[in-house]
Length: 102
Image 1 (cartoon, rainbow, N blue to C red):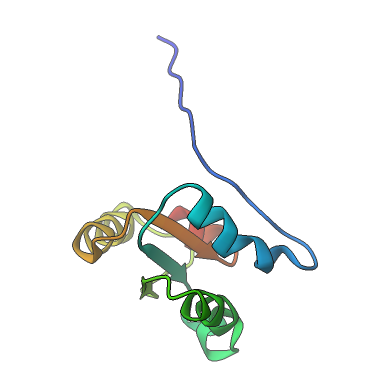
Image 2: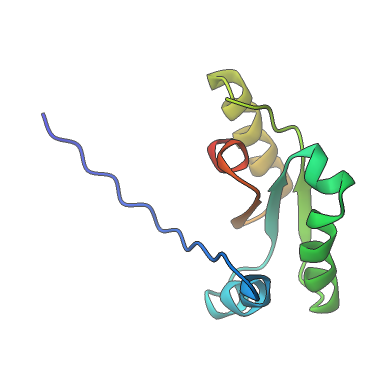
């Protein structure tokens, strides 16, 4: 049996890509972001660059940082539960695979 998955995702990368975050969210009518970032990116200030833009635009968000390398099914289920509890209607991931997987 064939399965089909349609992922409604947009990925930006490269110099200046960060400037697309707020316009993309507002153009799509989102109201609150669930920002997934691993603890190291928070510690190094990378996540702050994104949340600073969201703050400047008065765009509400919740940061989720319980990101594990090579996440297990339980890690993903925990992330889903946190997303649902946050009241967010979109997800912004910062970093690589583990943030996106969770």
